[in-house]
Image 1 (cartoon, rainbow, N blue to C red):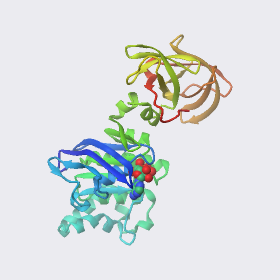
Image 2: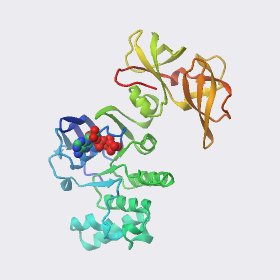
Image 3: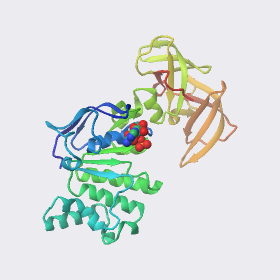
Image 4: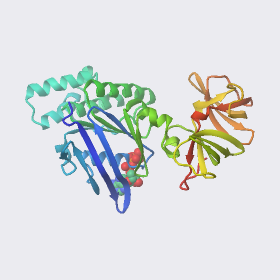
Length: 360
Ligand code: ATP
């Protein structure tokens, strides 16, 4: 369906009153891809999306659809579908009229408008609600209308800005599946803004992680999950155990690190001079309780807090040198238990430290 084979952002920057909100974003999107823009509040996600939509002029850079430059076009000439967190439906129009709105604006023949609208209604499963007003719908149904309205005119690109954040947890999961299904069945190209790493990982083919307006990493869910480019990305991707340390020895891709009284062996990410300051990162699910015998990264700890999370327990443990460790396990542990914890050196990542932020 896409009217292009590649969409390219070339050094896209946006400043607000001398403050950089987005700095030199380079990104090539292939037709059919699902791209998530991910990062903490204020990192520039919405700015990037609004630049793409044409709602914000660029301070620098350009945007291209194949060989056609589009950043100079007004939003309505870019032909992109948009879905916002706030739904932005017309309150006085019925569901059917809301969905048909874009087609009417484009002056499509009546019969085609009717046909496409009915099809979009079916796609988002709102057949029983077409004559209602938005105010008579639940949040999830309203967001379905917004999505149908954004895809009904077969846009070359669909832009979504935190579309699920006003929904409750259960509905959010359902709608997530629905969005992915629509993306696939309609052959859409989608750019999706979220601060929820789990949502981004489950939806996107590729993720763009932003921090303070700059790209930290672009990669597949798997790449970001297993090989975050720096400790800020690791932090964001759920590596909850981030400890400061100092390199004792580097041997190929492995480093021995001294951190809070523990000697740890891990995988080096980036460039590490000897004796340099590092941040060691481990995901809670990669901490094993009473794992196999004497692996390199074994430590004694006392369980302090336990929280049920489905089949697993999320727990906090205090190591014998006083370091706090987050872990997830299917084993039954309880506060006060003495345990042996271990971490596979392959899953323990060693990053160069930087001076800009303290870890906990
Ligand atoms: P959130 O998830 O909270 O929406 P975000 O990652 O989408 O955050 P942006 O909304 O893109 O972040 O904002 C990036 C930076 O630009 C922030 O520091 C923000 O304060 C600033 N900013 C955004 N829009 C404007 C504006 N219209 N005027 C001035 N500053 C702005």
